[in-house]
Image (cartoon, rainbow, N blue to C red):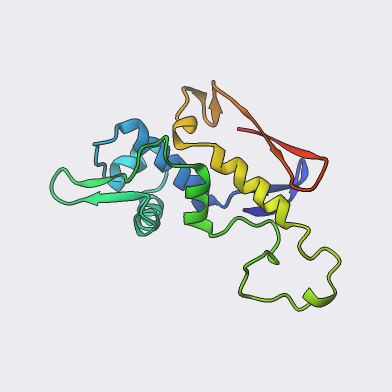
Length: 174
């Protein structure tokens, strides 16, 4: 996820382009059916994404075991699991790594130079967990809802995530 400045909302958290495309490709694969193996070319045509980009995304998803490949004339890629069992979190983490809105998260191997005196040390961990939890609640099957236009699902849901040890909660529209 990337913090974007200069947007009408001033700043926002935003998925990287390849992560966004990976979700689009996974939704298309899910719509094609669980036993359907589809080529990168076919998926590029169906999603209006450039074929090299789709191929790059599929390579990463294959490496992360979210899709499997089928060889032969009718070969291609298919989902490795049922769309209900795949979360948006699975896809985001496959493409971008661990979900974090700041780089100093618990378990990070790259220590921050200000760690010893940082007044916010550990304070972002509940927020990271809340965002991750919201994305885990949203399955690929949820993302397959009937569409009325690009990015506009007719079925929407609201996920409420309670931040641990805090009195506030985060509402995420999905």
